[in-house]
Each structure stands twice: as structure tokens, then as C-alpha cells.
Image (tube, rainbow, N blue to C red; front, side):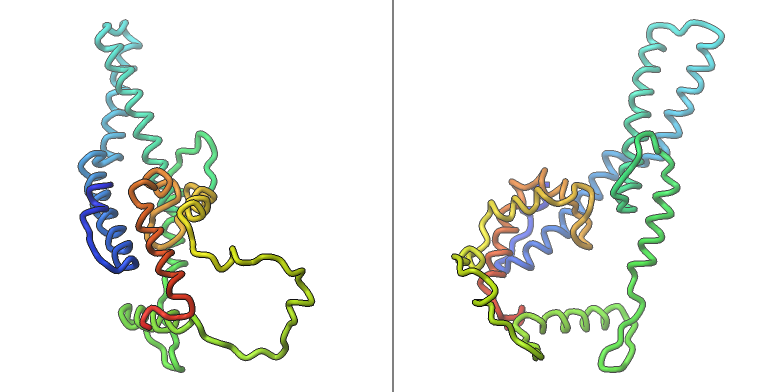
Length: 232
């Protein structure tokens, strides 16, 4: 993770964080393919070997080597089954998982449902529908980029000095610090990804010494921007 993360250099903290997350995700996917491989195939092979050893055990005692091999294969099988369930759970974003529930078909259905539900097929901009992905991305960026600092008319106003007891609120306007960001990360649900990047809080906590400074830089730049948009 550290090698992939620090392979990207950019002076802009937003662009640097985005590119580092993208590169690291690709490197992790490649590493997983090489290291873990096809989990289902390995499960099938382990299951077949266990069945053959169990069948042999019904007709004769296993030799010490066969008994050792069976224990090794069973441990590998249980580990692979747990990994397959974890992968399916992560793809489906299911927050709870009952012990012993290894039926991953449920999670695959849930993953497909989420993909269809979360997909944006079209947007309406100034009364005209658009459906091309690049056009929708540009429209979404333009919309949210214009939001910071925008004033909206109000029908009434509040005198906050009459409602709130005067206190020292300087902390609310203080810059973000590393400890504050870390405390927020620690409170995130471990298996729920906070955004479309796919990184969950468990990854952030495990790799915080590596990614910490980039998140601090992003929040510091956000504080410096205050009421200005990204293109200001």
C-alpha cells in the first residue's frame, strides 16, 4: 500500500488524494489477483480433496502424512470460505452478517440490486434531459461547484443572540487538526465505505500512518477555501 500510495506526486491536495486512491486501488486489485487468485476454483479443489480423503478414511485409517494433509487442506478451505464471504459482503455493502451464513448468492443478488439502484440513468439540466455519462458528470460538477458560498433568500430571520447563551465558539471556526480527523475515522462503521471510491473505514484505520498526511492536507485546503468554490 505504501509503495503504491507514494508513487503519485501532485501539488494540489485534492488531485493528489484522488490519484493516490485510484492508483492504490488498481495495485491492490492486481495484488489480490496474483496472491489470492480464483477463490472459487481453490475452494472447489480443496472441497474435492477433502471428500476424497474422507472417503478413504471410511475404508481405512489415514496415514500420518494423509492426516496432516487433511488438516492443512481443511484449514485452507475454511480460510478461503471466509474470504469468499467477506468479498461478497463487501461488494453487497451488507452491514450485518450472521455467523455461519456462507450463502454468498444472497450477497451477489444484493450487489446487483445496489448497482441498479444507485445508477443514474439521466439528469435534467435547465429543462433538457441528458444521458451521456460525460455530460452528466460535467453537469453534476458544475452544480456542486457553484454551491459553496451561495446565499439563498430567507422568509424570516432569527436573532441567535436571544436563543443561544453566549459561549466561546472559536473552536467551531478553528482549522481541522489531525487528531480531530482521526477521531472521525475511528467512529466510522468498519465495513461501510464512506464514498464511491470503495475504501472503507477498516482500510483507513489500518493504513492511517500512510494516508494520514494527505487527508490532513485536503481538510486544511478546504478550511483555507472557506466560502470560495473549487474554481475560484
